[in-house]
Length: 207
Image (cartoon, rainbow, N blue to C red; front, side):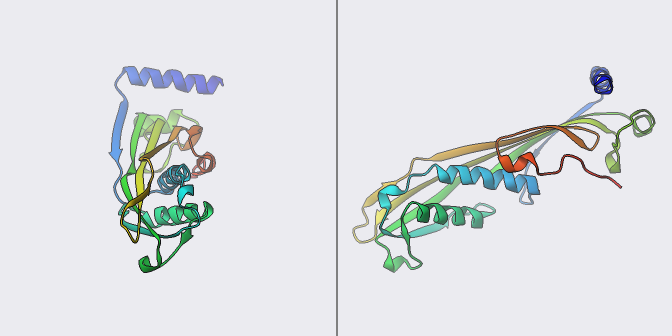
């Protein structure tokens, strides 16, 4: 505890002297493992909140032409699975359907904020008895937060009459992963998704 208190005091002193860097990243198409879990987990929660039961027992074709987000395969699978769980009879051919359900995704992505308190490499290496290594040895205390958002909606129409038969509300779910690091060690973690309690590993071995 005394070592942690000393580090916190050192971090405050550095912050006051201007040794703080903050970067904001808007995620591109390449996703890390944690980012994929955050997004797909948030999507699972959004899909699970949809009530398909008014269509139970009907032959349904799911139209997914508007589901164009990255990782859309998981979204389509999740929708089909939830529809089957709630008693809908999924058909592979639109001609066999009594009801056609169309799905669209309005948002599917993450935002990331990363901030760190840094020391010059030589100073940090000589004074701090914790692993801070790798190519970024100047990073001493770091905060990283990722937020995810999924927005989607569906509606169904009668295949014969083309009249509206059912619609969902617009569903929006958010998720978060908030971590604090000392060197390469993840010392605290808060998340909205259980799977991110253990992944990524809290301690990263740097060689």
